[in-house]
Length: 342
Ligand code: UDP
Ligand code: MG
Image 1 (cartoon, rainbow, N blue to C red):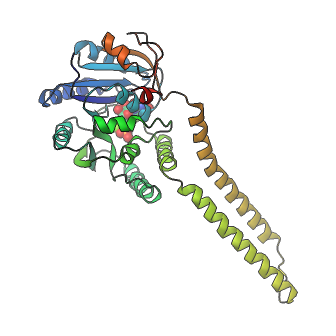
Image 2 (image 1 turned 30 degrees about the vertical axis):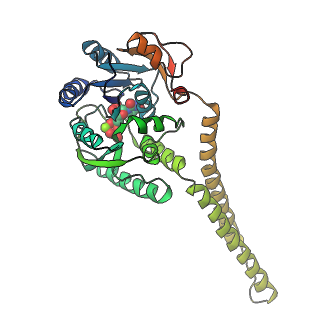
Image 3 (image 1 turned 60 degrees about the horizontal axis):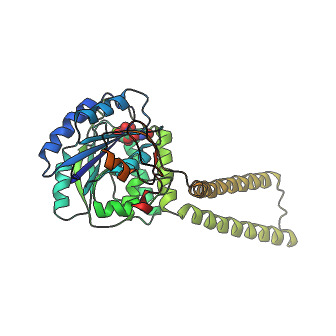
């Protein structure tokens, strides 16, 4: 089989309700694309029937490949796995819940043909998302833009098309706590956005509860900014200057006999406040240290348990960073070293 021009990467976690419709819509879009395409379905440790449905999809149509991760590694790792396996010259990342309408891919492909290397989708409107999610999202992107040196466009998720050259650049970044959309912002290249209306989820519910949103936001800020560390430094300067001033004025007041600071309550308040600030700042530093720890351990970004729909030669070629080739049905490959070997 010759390599397809387009690859569509779909991370899937417990989406059994969306998959039949996803397959229909993808097939219709693939029909309309101007060149051959493939779909890489990544099962991110689903606990429902998703894995089986994905395997069946790859049996029905040779253009569909399904990759089963050994457990849930998270959305960002699942995207990474799919990108590692994609062979196309233009590679699209798409959510399985059909919030990102596959039809937008046609417009992205047209921009790619115009010569753009990264075509990201801008959420013009978000249907069926709570006011809370919209508010937290918009304030988060605002804060991130201020804090980081990366120019991440607002209202852009992971739905995007990337050219092979941009993808190879992205694959050089094997950091563990990943914020994929920021990483694509960081690589540069010729980028452009297309606008779309983000639909409602067609089935199931979001896998990004508040705690996951906080984790993604922390990864984004810590991965792309050292502002929190600098803030600790600045706060330290301000507080120590204030305390020197306070001490000086207390001494002056005492020796001039103007006033003797009585002080128990003020002392306790000051000590407790400083203790709190110190712990807070230690926590900030800890977040960076924990990420250094993750990097030093150097564990793979994901592990593959099984693949369906990869040909034999492809399997050995595409067993990214593995010591031994992957075999169908029983396979294990890791996603950490592909960039060095590719
Ligand atoms: N997803 C995944 N692994 C996870 C969580 C989510 O592969 O741990 C997939 C999920 O199946 C969907 C996409 O990532 O295709 C986006 O997730 P979701 O729709 O829950 O996020 P939201 O759109 O609510 O931000
Ligand atoms: Mg969704």
